[in-house]
Image (cartoon, rainbow, N blue to C red):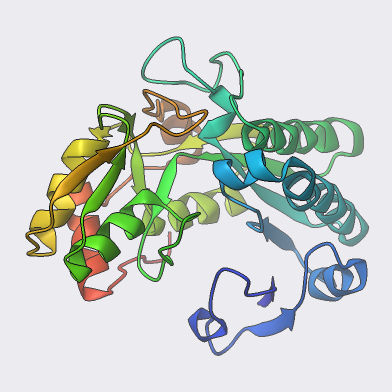
Length: 280
């Protein structure tokens, strides 16, 4: 196994010791080619994952999320390797109906959503034009151990850091927004299933099919952390989606995907730092 990473948002210490590490930017063609050499499967997870950052710097975000994806697909084509790509629920924008299935209208509400929709389309086109086996996995709100809390990271890691420090837990807007939080263990399972399936050239939602409001999430994290932090409400974020919940029937029927980690159990893994993923 070879890992290409610039470690701008993670730690080298999180990489399995048996992996070969190529440290560098995915936009560096030489390092990308080195990492892809002789690969049978490429999991393309590299991205700038922040809606806020894409609004502040759309050009930079596009370079990482779209141009690097195209380069990765070209590397996969040179190696004749299957490519599993990380797409996002952000491609749906403000959904017309809940739950959201893969055929729902695509109306991204941010540059990030547009970029991930491009990833989705490129995956399909490369399978259609070149016969390259590709799969796009549309992650909903992924979370798990070792996720770094910062202005641009997932809301769960931010809330948890605030609760542990006894600081106010800050909720954007009134907290009625709903999200489908999927644990990293289930995300990994979806990727392993995508590595094996014959159902290529397709896109699949990866979520749980369940949603929680952000204000209820804040309360759950405060309780799980044993914190007495106050929950405070701030101005809504630009481009924030009000409702989100995955319809995972396609992934369930075509990939055999089944989420196994309930949110309360997933939050417990953040408290004790464990992860329970096992091979498919």
